[in-house]
Amino acid sequence: MRCHNSGLCFVYTARLAHFYADMGDRITSLFEEHRRLLFSIAYRMLGSVADAQDMVQETYLRWQQATDEVIRTPRAWLTTVMTRLCINHLQSARVQRESYVGQWLPEPLVDEATGNPADMAMVADSLSLAFLVLLESLNPTERAVFLLREGFECGFSEIARIVGKSDANCRQILARARQRIEERRPRYDVSPTDAEKLVAPFVAALKNRDLEAMLARLSDNVVLVADGGDKPGALLRPLEGATPVARAMLHAAQKHGMVGEILWASINGLPGFVRFEDGLAKAVLAFGVVAGRIQSVFVISNPDKLRHLHRTSAKPSTQG
Image (tube, rainbow, N blue to C red):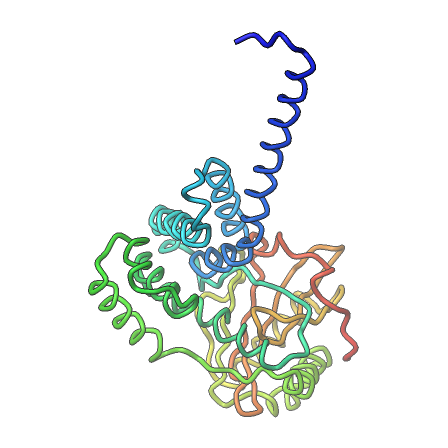
């Protein structure tokens, strides 16, 4: 229909444009309120920073096409879409995961260490590298049920709707998954004091090739898990025992060197560091501490898993 009053048409068009602009801002604002939650779900489901970011972007694209009915329940809708995307991704990537060369570790989340012990303990408990590896023993649906209930406190009715199962079935899935995970779930002491008093001198001893000083800080049954992908010389199996672990780390340090910048960081809530050369992350080390000794050492040197890391995520070492 043609408008015969150009002034009124202009006003109407301007108001309509303003309305849609406001609607777009509201949709974007609502999504941004949930972005951190969505990334948290995706990262725990997939163990990959890059894939988690892709899932967040895909969820946002779908969110932009959402109806007003959907917007009334944004958290439920976004959680559902994100979880289903992750389940589908895991199912399609399962063959690739099963054929992975050597030990699989998730892409590390690196943040400057927080001074709040409670925050560090919470992050390390739900995001530790060892815990995420344990989640690999669950199939995609089991993983979703376990994480949504244990990690994000979703109700069984909501979980059932997301995964397409009954409430009773979800309860059974959770019970089985919880038993499998809790039996092997590690618990670490991750206070800043432990990191300063134990990990930093250990790394200094590693730099100085001081075997005895390293052994003094390692648990007798310490386990070294390294993810170098299919790169030559990568450690293909976990190594256990203080002396074998210390000698393996000394050999690696001698072979690859401790050159470049050593920047301290919180690695998935655990004390550790990132080694950079020419601005590129070359290795990430994280240390699980139990009762004043290093119980676990995680090393990620697969370059495909370090591309997202930047020097601003860590801080310079003052040790050694």
